[in-house]
Image (tube, rainbow, N blue to C red; front, side, top):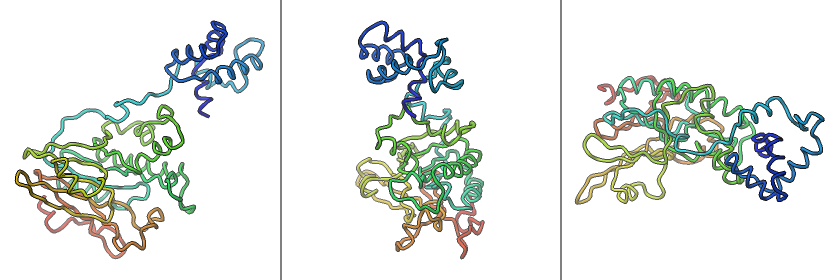
Length: 337
């Protein structure tokens, strides 16, 4: 398939012209590579030359396997996508860090069935000026590096289901800063493992919003937040090692996701500063087969989200009934927001 895509970038005439200009297939490969900004090997040029000369019809306009779509691609000079910063950045907006809603791991389509309604209620209560998504926005169970449950959807249907949730989330929060994450980037990790360059892969936005949308979403390795009180916070999907040691090393407070069963705020003080870490739980459906690996673990997932309001970290749990459904109240100390 990758070879076919590469072949579709060149017309028969461009290939034969490059070959006719030199008797060296390596030189022809270099000429074609420079023509489209891609990598073409001399072995590929030799193969193309053979198929053109063996299968070209009398009018010289077609070859075996040629289709209307292929000719359209060649004639319009479609080229392979080159990775760029624009792949991850959305439409720029003015940043106001006074009231930040933090959305932890959703793992769509294995998200909690009340996640959207809960987030809508939280947003109505705190009136966020900025929304940060800590990543694992999609699960990618069927693409996992681990064994996949055969009773769950294959990769295609799973993605289609996840897109329904992500597009609803984008309608609710059209501007979001999203952290790169181990599940969110699974397709890129898979491609890297098998030697597939990113030029062959769609961007996050193209995958999640193929019919448009998500223009205000941006993806980052980590997000540095300048709070109104002058402090700095780093938002990221996960930390390597102890989160408070990392905060001390970065000289910055840290908020992260990834650890579904942790929902806490820790403070530490030095002679020069007070800093904190916040781990924000998750918004998954703990009963989904996608999380069966954790059913015997003593620490269960904690469902909820978090916020940074007036420079202070805040945890907002989703209060559940005995059936695991949201009770539809924020209650307690959250009522005054």
